[in-house]
Every structure is written in structure tokens, then in C-alpha cells.
Length: 348
Image (cartoon, rainbow, N blue to C red; front, side):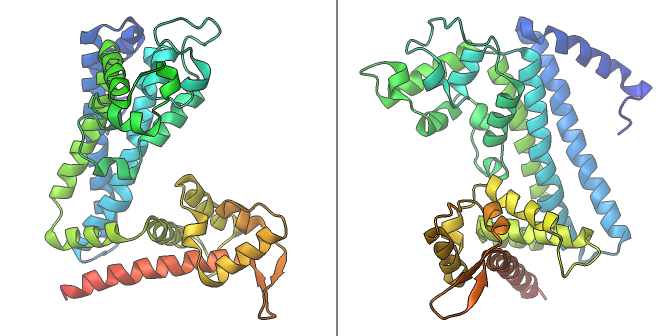
């Protein structure tokens, strides 16, 4: 992409200038900055597509339709999430958005940290949100599944305030006698007042989503059938399938994964908030319940793997929670692979 080249000097220098002027909230400056970033998002995603495709073609991966779907699902889509998060964070951080406005519109803790009256001042509040808190909020708002929902601006748009109000209504924050519709109205009014940075975030999301839709539209019908089958898989099966394939590809001994590999997979399940109690069934679930009866509060996938003691069940046999959980992940990945294989076999 020739980043940092002489050919890009004009665009890069303009971005440097605009970035320093973002806190002034000049609409034209924000519009031009967002245009540069949207151009970079589209260019980067298409570069990712082309490089992955060329690499896999050189490896002899066939049929081409299958390979193109793999590139979209495991390359473009995942990188789009990362890129949109990074771009949105840089924009918010450079703009130095006010703490209170950010917390009311997108944050999660304003009910505990801000006064009941939205426009009143709170001297002890910071002027801007911390970088870590902004990253945490953006990470929660921009996920792979977020791009499936067609809504102008996504969670950052004006209509996205309805969605966020349902998650965090905080009636006490808005004062007595205020109903849900009034809360949405207040939030949308604040969203409009905070332009141009609210509109800028919405545009960054829209550009990413539109490029993903465009890339998907170019896939052949065979690839789209696999996409439909993949969507029908549970989130647990998707993650298990995706991460096990990736880890085994990088592992010298693909049959026996290292503890660090398993911790990476299980940490991904925890970060995606995959419910432990809902996905574990049969023997793994009974072993987990036995561990909890011993007084251990095992609530995450990672904690299951870190628990090393042996458990005795009613059948007189001994079991390891670590072993049972890894078996459950293996089985989920196998179910996903079986379903995807059936889709491909239909056209053959």
C-alpha cells in the first residue's frame, strides 16, 4: 500500500493537520478527516482481500469459490472489526470528546458517576474519558455480529441511541417521571448537539459495513451457501471451529495443542461472552457441577482449564474438568466442520 511513501505525502500531511484541529469541532475539518479515514478503510480491506487470495492461490487452494469465502469470513471480516475499532478510537481520542457527553451517549457508567440533571456540571469528573475506557466501549460496540444489522451509523448513529437506551435505560439518571420514549428523545437530541464527532463515528461504521456488504455481494452463489450454513452455527461452534483450525495451522504438533493455545481459545470464548452453563452438556456439565459443589466458583472457560483437581462422579469414574472442557470444544469444532462439509458436498 506504499504507506509513508512520497506519493502519500499530500494525504498524510493533511491528516496530520486535521488531526490537531479536531478538538475545535469544525464541521469541515471533521468531514475531510473522516473522508481520509474512510478511504483508508476501503483501501486496506481490499488490499487484505487481494493479498490473501493471491497467497492461497499460490498454495493451490481450490475450488476458488470456497477459497474466496474463507478469505471473506476469516480475513476481511475479522480485519474489518479490528480496523474499525482502531480508527474509531483514534478519532475519539484525537477529538478529545467531553467525558459526560461520551458517557451519556456510549458509556456504561454514567448512572453512577454523573448527576441526575444531564446539563449540570460535575467538577470531579475528568474532562475526557480515559483511553482504556474508550477502547473498552468501542470493543463492546463493534463486533462481527454488529455488522449484520442494517442501521444507519450502527450503534454510533442517531437511531442507534434507541438500541443503546434499551441496554442502559438508567431511568434514575434522567430524573423522576421520565419514560423510555423521553429517554430516547433526550439521547438523540444530545447526539445531534454533539455533531460533528457523533456523525463522524457513524460514517466510519457505515463505510466499513458498506464495504463488507459489497465484498460479500461479489462472492459466488456456492460461497454464499457456505456463509448461510456458517451463520446457522452457534457462536460456540463458530469460535471453536475458527480458533482450532488457526491454532493447528500454526502448531508443529497439531494433535496435541500447547496450554497457551488452549488458553487462547478459551479466552476467546470468555471475551465473546459464550455462556459456559448453556454450552456444556452431558458429562462435562456434570463434572462442572461437581467442582462447584466443592465450593469452587468456576464461571469462565479459562477457569475450567486452570482447575487441575480430579472429580469423582456417581458412576465411580474419575474425570478432569480441563479434559472435559477441551473435549467439548473439540466436539463443537467437529460439528461445525461436518455442517460446512455437507454444504460443499451438495454441489458436487
